[in-house]
Length: 150
Image (cartoon, rainbow, N blue to C red; front, side, top):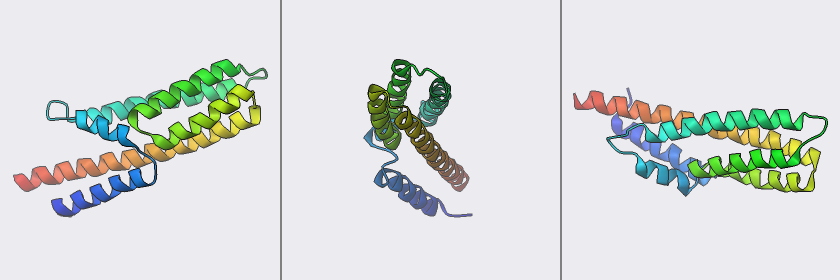
């Protein structure tokens, strides 16, 4: 079993890479600062809510962009919602794609919107995967720290 120090080092390096690669921004750090002993799972709970919300919005966008007559105002409202929730947890790359997506909505550019939906889905799945890995690493560290202190 890896030592607590090794796990901590791996966790910090992995977390740093998420910021360097633009997956996360300072909003994520702000959420982390709100977590304490009274609410040790705060970050994971907030991010899990984001995952549920984002998945629902992506499904709505898929449906809306599959219509024969696309309601671009509705599509834009969904993208705006996703941009806000991704911004609130610091999912920077998802947020950035939303900005371009909204421009395509304003232009009523169907192809641009569909390509943006693919990009957003890809970025969402990437950040979801990265954060799930981060949480697993945190849980391993927590378990190793507890067993080391016993």
